[in-house]
Amino acid sequence: AKADSQLQQQSRIQNTKMPVDLTLLSHENNIKQWFSNKYVYPVFQPQYDSDSEKITGIECLTRVNLPNIGAISPFDFIAAVEQNNRIDEYTLYFIDNALTSIHSLLLHNPHLSCSFNISAQNLDKAFADKLVNLFQNYTVLPKQITLEITESNAIKMTSEALYAISRLKLYGVKLAIDDFGTGYSSISQLVDLPFDEIKIDRSFVCQLADNKKAQAIISATFNLATSLHFNLIVEGVETQEQLEFLRDKGNCIIQGYLLSKPLSTDDLQSLILGKGKFKRASVSKIIKF
Ligand code: C2E
Ligand code: MG
Ligand code: MG
Ligand code: MG
Image (cartoon, rainbow, N blue to C red; front, side, top):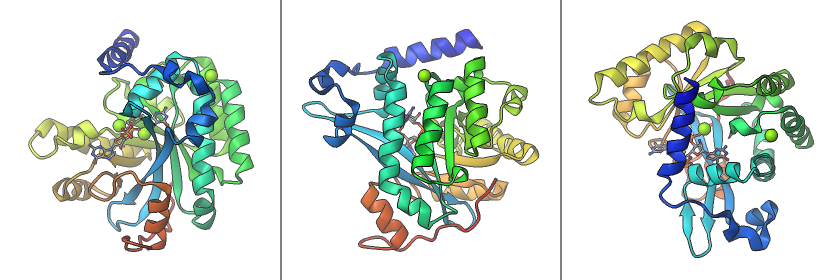
């Protein structure tokens, strides 16, 4: 499994259409400046309760738009930042920047959760301590925060990484397994880790209409989540048919273009307050644990 995931990781990097050259940014090698120049910024994708269609949370996602180059996939960008050993600095600054935009929304909506993607390289004691400090500075309730770790990264947890996630878990944040179903982990491995949420990968959802295997995998994941008391999030829901299929399986949280694409800070605020082109969205009063 270890060799498998290393291979996967490598092929992802090799598959990069255009390797991200961070020297492009070297005239201002300061990550803070990438944000102040708006080369890098957060966007926010709402997550909805499948039954009530009320908003339960948002996922903060990186966007990269470089002068003379244009948009770069966040996946490629994050891989480049990792290769340059700057992922701790990047993740902390990204979360800081995102919270600057939305902390008052979180304070006013204590049932709204907010999730961030964490790289495997981030998970050590020093990073966990800095992250807890950051959350404390914003006076955000720890239970409003979810940290997402991809399934392939969850498999290769070192003892240092385990320490970091226990530290964060004890502080009170929730932990999610991202891209569930793609990482070949064993169920017992997952149960041993202190996760609260499973996020089913988009690749299964987009095959729901005509692939019996994808349907079976999603049904099985609903059963697993129910019996082991995980919250279930389904990402990449694009059609009403997919939503109906999922509703038929039970209650879950839905993230996908059908209900909302990732939004700018202004559009997120407008959605929740019902301003401009946005009809007011209700925020769920139920926070699930
Ligand atoms: P992810 O965490 O699984 O994020 C979900 C991805 O699916 C996002 O892509 C989102 O825009 C996309 N998505 C959501 N709904 C739909 C849909 O209905 N249809 C389609 N086709 N796509 C949908 P995005 O923003 O391009 O991010 C890709 C990946 O990059 C993320 O996957 C995550 O692994 C990584 N990533 C993004 N931002 C960060 C970050 O700040 N830190 C780290 N470490 N990784 C990040
Ligand atoms: Mg994610
Ligand atoms: Mg580190
Ligand atoms: Mg995914």
